[in-house]
Image (cartoon, rainbow, N blue to C red):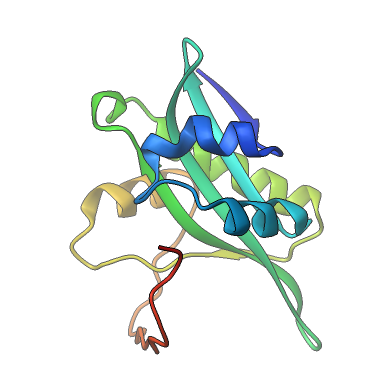
Length: 140
């Protein structure tokens, strides 16, 4: 397995089957144009097997941290350490870019994600609330 940072639309399209929906051209361009947006893809024998996305977030009094936006591993590639490796690679990228930390939200019942995050060094915080606003549908 190898992990690469995707920096072009062709790489996003190749990883498209791993995404929730097919990539949208305008959203892909915007994502790739922002130096604080990161897409890492794990390949097994040149086939995309999983991905992780991260977004750098900067606050005036705290500095920059990495938000792990999404992690996915193709069903036929699960339970091989790919998720853990992707999270660890994003954490390494965050450190290299000067982030003071990294965080992620996940469903309490998503045991696979929690295992991957913990195996890559993440620590679960107690008593957190997840609150959302929905303004419109995302791309598509």
